[in-house]
Length: 388
Image (cartoon, rainbow, N blue to C red; front, side, top):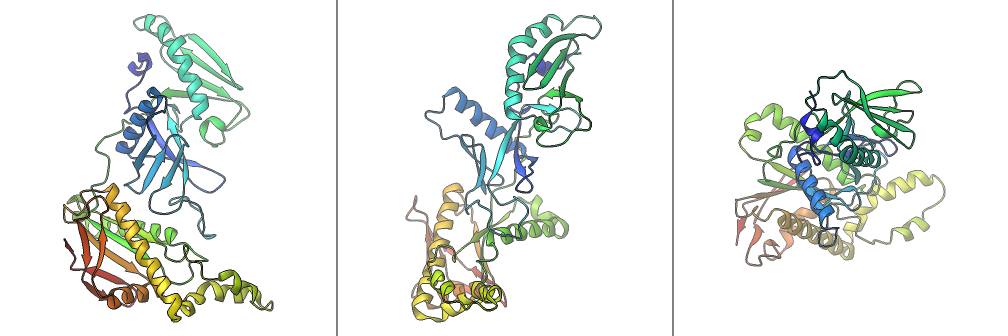
């Protein structure tokens, strides 16, 4: 019997599945968005297509509210930090800007999406040439036979009377860089994903926000990458040790705070006067420990503290923009700082004449006030805050 979705000119949004790239810099493997994200992206894609892209940005917030899918650029970029890869030790793209892919036609064996361009040609041919033929043969009891063929860019697609569709190709490109065995491969393909996207497949709203502040050595590493590791580790521990926490609708989110990159601390001058002997070791020391020397200077200390304060306020206001009900629902804020970041955060709180206020620019009458600091060997936690 023919699959009913093969007879529709436009399949339901739940059957379309969107993916984002996941892997090294040269090879992309595709990971499916959550059901709610995929539905929202597909709806925006169709709205953008109907509106001819004039009045719509074509952007959708995805991946637990940390990323934004841009349908004009076909990219999924982080909201709270830059998406370029900085750390030489980071081989994954979990926190970087990655390509996105619309999955409409799939390899029926492993459900890898076909290349968007090829899938678009197959979809156009299917709607205009194949659906009329399949509609006439829907109740036919004739034996299986080929009713239509299409050749495109070295690929041959065959439709049969019972709804089976086959792709014959010499190229691995349609299946997202996954190599097929042999010189010539014939694989069954399917229109629409085999699992319906669930609109309830999403995480609950954030109830606890944690800013992660880095210490020394930011020139060599990346707080974004380290924050992603913290996020994964805490999620793993919560699932294993505190299963009731996730089921109760509570959720903690970690956002990296990079106070070092925006600063211009005459690093080029320091590099020019570095002695040539044992230069790699000297450059390593410069990248790691020079921040401590800068912070002991009264001039640079104020600049560093101001950079961290402004970055905290910028990120918090940006978070409120995407989570407008966070404060009204009693959301809590903490800061996890490491190494020099702990010292800076401690000094900001202890030396300020008034409590730090992070203000929502959309609602100036609503602000969050930090009033108490609890210090630990490697972190600072802000607590006892209130809405004003």
